[in-house]
Image (cartoon, rainbow, N blue to C red; front, side):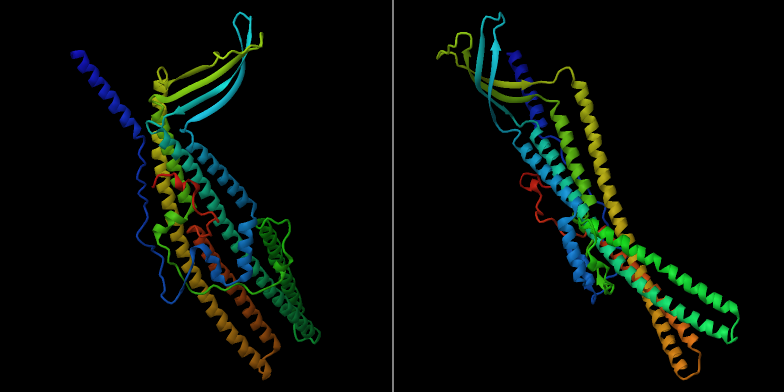
Length: 470
């Protein structure tokens, strides 16, 4: 009787242990360290809100909209990432059927040990590994994490792609505007040289005045090389982003720089958790690490399953097959770890450390995202103030140029005075264009930091129908 009680207690303890093992590894709480609000954001009620998924449309440039759509469709890196995502989804589907019953047909040959006869064997094998001890959940997490990581990588490429296309297009238009302004300044320098030559011939000026005007003209011509080289570089870069081997000639036709009005940023810090791909990638790594730890834990416990086979054999020596040569077998399949227990325990401890490390990496990704957005918001405000100051300076010099033109008309000043005013105005135009481009690029950096880009056509993760909620 005492032995019976001891056996019952031992059986109960083992059962409790096995049931506890079924729970597997719990998903850790991520506790994303996001602030309640942005420190640098000062939204204006009258300003236009920006759509996170189509933020570049704030420039109101149909040509830019078409470029972004083409890049999202034809870019080769995005196409590569899409194929890798599809591959990980297929692996996820195969992982889900790993613990379903399997049936396999087989044929083979067999020879008696005494070499007196050979047989042809045909039949079926059936196996079914039971989903116990959290192994199925862990396998699902591994595959789900891989799918989510691939999806995050695809979205990262799309975010980067949109940002690069918009940046290159804005810089291309700014370089074209800079080239036009420098070209006008060269013409003004040429007029000053002509006036200096006349004054030197009339002995109204020293010869060095002509030499100085000639040097200024040469410098103005040399300055044109920079925007022209930039235009060529940016057009080639755009072609690569759009998956083309040469630029579109229409890009090289000068056009106004897209304008960006007053905008309102409606995104909250918590929005980063669902829009920034780097954070999504870090979260996927946590899921995958939890799956690895779950598998390591399940490997400490037996693998249980059911198996069976049905085979027929034919004696190839006598070419005889009888009706009683069918063999049927069935029974449990048990795989119990014994002598490598220490190595399995070490793997479990290592997997748990990897899981903790992935949680720290996730929190670090959140902190980096928040810091990048905060920096971008602050930089955008600084560039807006710089643009406003440059606009005021440009307006003041425009008034001065008008006054000089009036003085020359009234013969109260020499034509050279008006040309000097025009040169100063052109220089202010360059400064204003540079400040405007800097503000536009700060806007691009902000929405790249926010993870702004359209979602792929298939925006629902493939793992969503079989993945545990997180």
